[in-house]
Length: 61
Image 1 (tube, one colour):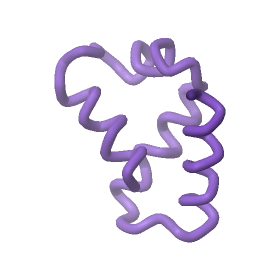
Image 2: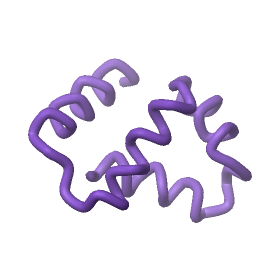
Image 3: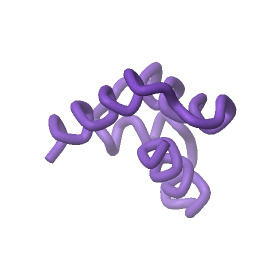
């Protein structure tokens, strides 16, 4: 959920005009950004999703 909130905050800030611009900045696929942002609609992510977020963040450090 933290990653989803972070992505949404980047979009809300106006720094990126679209999800596509955000994906280019982050270096991830549009599908990944959509997957992460959909968690905001679903509420709390399950344990597997949180594990995936940790792996994803570690790859981009």
